[in-house]
Image (cartoon, rainbow, N blue to C red; front, side, top):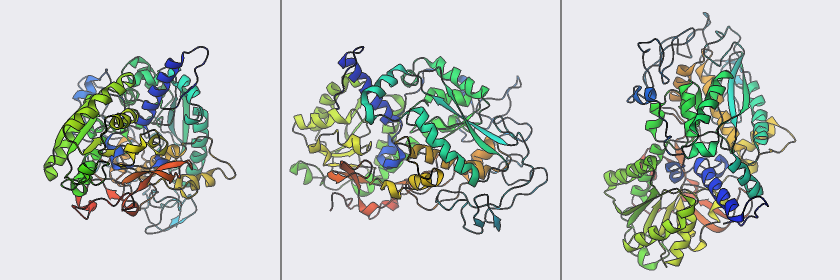
Length: 586
């Protein structure tokens, strides 16, 4: 780990503890999209454990429905998961069905019919529309082109929507521990909220000019929260999250886009936003059941954890189970069939996801876990826990460790394996090239994960569009790609929702999204319960000598199979079945 200097006010041990705690939360809640999206990463993008507060009305509200549809209660109020009926709105309908006329985006507003996507005409972006033409030419994730709209848009179709604006909000961070950690890690830390919002607004101006918002413009209102996001992460000081969600409502929010490198969005905050009936683009790595429970308010650019567990099982069953552990460092293991062991956090969410992964492998290919270890996400005890976990894996003859792990515990695990002269294969979570360099090189040169090669910056979509949005400038925040893909998805939903913009039409837009061509982060698509558009990932291996496209330093994840993309939900896509992945140059 990096050694940092203590300030005169803080002892060295305390500063390092804060830094480690901060880095753990950074990596477990958001790996920048610029460094790739992978199958094993998607299993375990670690987020806060279930918040201590649970709203009873949300818990009881139609838990079996993906739509969150519910009639008004006896006292005349609408449950948080429901879409209130009113002017320009209608109640939600179940997933996969067509909303009522008031909720559909293709229904006439004030008697004016909308042209279908692909209708001849000129779009706001200047492109000539036609079959197969995108709204903007610079992104495969763009919705289909529609001619420029000039009719009456229906005015205030939903809270946070007026005849000329759509209000999005961003909560700024408010954590003393985080500020100390930022100061301590220096260049390794994300930039400031000001830097991130500067970059985001550059993209915003371009998107407002080019996407069809039916006479409206998106405005982003940022505010200083009273909640402490790192305390909320640990299930404490939850009243701050509630107060900040109320502030978002008072600002007239239709949607919250706080998920960012500075981590002010938390699971408790997002749940409180749902309580206030505000749509959120967040919910990273949480089980599909959580999205279903809080529908129609929660969406994510990244897939839910349930999708990740299924994808991991598909990869392991098709290309690993029943084959020799050829990537292990121990020659004895290389010449015997794989014996799997699983490591995951002990909190309920990730215990559930570990169960889903183990169950899917057992059902699909009869593979079982010879041993399973669960650990507490507690930086102070991770080294001690790792010593025991490694010992147990070794004694149970595990050749292949499936590490559904946060980025911090992987470090002592790898070095404890060295100390115990244990050299298995690692099917690990990739947390980006810089974190990979913190691992024991003896262990990580036997590691495979769900992260491929990072695209070169100059060829990345997010950077190419940045040069359109801000000619002659460089991004102020190193993780600006997060802002880009967040807004890309958001504007796609807003355009597809149509002029009758409300939570029901946003949900319909998400679920009915046509499959896009493949871009830097795979292909996007809608479908039943498509709370995220992401559909596919890559497999990669660690090369300690490879030059990273992310920062130009030695040590990088490199794509296996020539950079092939694997659809998460299709086992047959991992063909040829019962053959080793082509990794490590083999």
